[in-house]
Image 1 (spheres, rainbow, N blue to C red):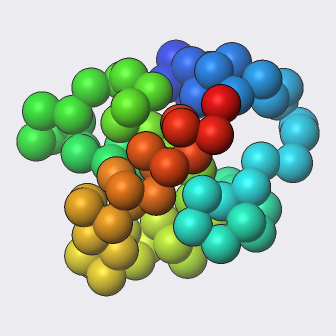
Image 2: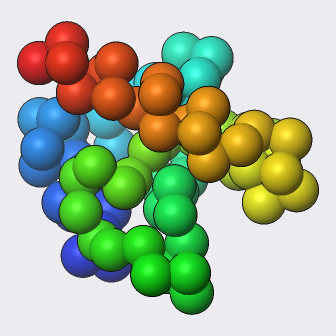
Image 3: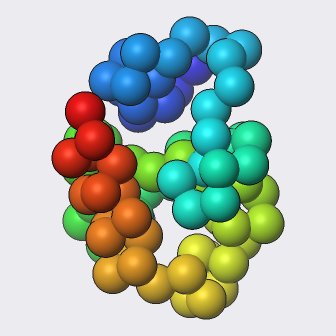
Length: 81
């Protein structure tokens, strides 16, 4: 398992194989996405990681789900803890 995925799972108390909801839709997430890509300086930090469905992940890479939108949704999830 990649370190950033383990970081996300551990932070939110998930185990491998658990249902992990997308932070956008609540549907089953299949990807942990870097909000700011590593190629643009994003880090493997909980503040930069979000759970997405495959479709949402593709939309993020296409720019349909903006970095600002993803960060806002993720910050709301972090505040719930």
